Image (cartoon, rainbow over all chains, first blue to last red; front, side):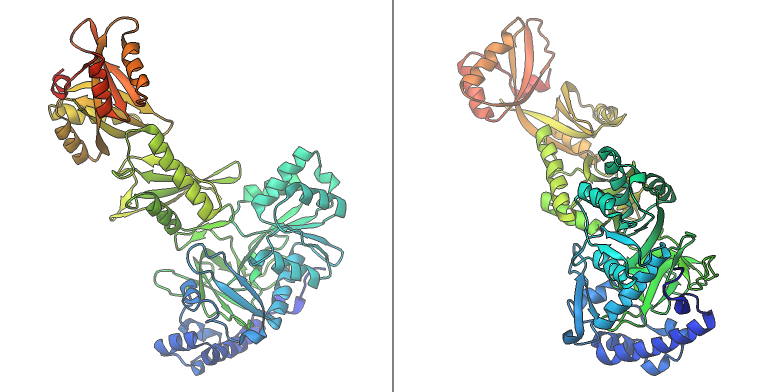
Length: 433
Length: 143
């Protein structure tokens, strides 16, 4: 099986543009009439549904931000009544209200379609045994891939994350051929496997679909070598649909986006202008088939670029490059989204005033290591070593309970963290990905 | 009898101690005792100087994190067991020592020791009652 849906995946651009235009016009009409928040935004921008005649008019529409989803929490952006929503997912909400997304029955069907394409890109077919080690639950990873794997008729092992020894035992005993998890977990499995004395030859693994965190080519080579698989990069975000938003094929030259469902744009995050093909900028998505939570020009904050030439695999749909950064200050550390503001609120709880701080991220032996430099101030300082060590420990454990990841806390002298234009530089990312 | 000790936060990187002593020196502040407690990442410099209020002010002006703490200074006979007899007194009264360090006096037969205690008032009273010489702040600043 080379393609899951040859018609759409290999459609000539002219025809695709026509379909996108039609679907865009319908989507704009629908959100204008069904979602007051969108209607207000469009009225404010002086846009009516009639102004959107084709794909070229997309740039006239106002952007949608994560904040819009927060402001209308939980269901304010839904375009259908709850009676038509059959599934609800949500982000963890560590930086405020969780982002809630709803799917109609048809949306679940669309989701299965796009994740089926992802899996087929990795070489899956009905004979595959797909071990899904992404988390199930409110997180979209597990169930998203699950429905796609069922759709192509593969045998699904819904093992979810964790319990590594058992994962490996099952992989070996059940003859899993496709592994779906984060790339760092795949590497961890490889290490555990070696410790358990299980060789890659004992497994039937052929490919892995790895995503949800940034990873390097060097990490890909290591996973491929140690697990004996084809490792492909996948991309998704719950606001758009979850996994299935983009996926590499075996040629590993960018992630194919199912453009019959999602229209990507690259914009300059500052001027908000749409940039020409090939430019690097912020990735923006418009969904054109979703019913529950349609998104108009959603600002992902992810930095990427788009390639429109035809891939060696024959797919004509556009490919996005690996995400190389963020336009906001969010960091992804071991798969966890971390905002400096979260660290700031932890520090506020520890001292009388929030001290200056800086997050330094490094990658040591393929694992992200977070160090938090905290400038000492009068209220934190003591002449006793044990009291200062208590301060460090308190910050460390508060961060661990808020973010769920461990960090090294280092107290530094005042004014040693670099300020630019009076504002501290909060994040130093030294990872070479 | 309380002596004001100043404490300065120092990162463990070269030149920091020199920077503190340079600031003090150029402001005519004389150091009579000094101790550093350090960990992997940072150290706490503890100083007895002739003008602690001025020292705190100038160090703060130079961006250091400084605080002043009350400690006591005692003089013990410079012979084996000299310090032990003073510490025995504190132990008997269950007065805890946070930290301590010795410094050089002017007389050959006495050893001077700084003590940071959890109950300094009671300590002074007890030490004096047991004929241990507690130095006045002036004595110490002018050493």
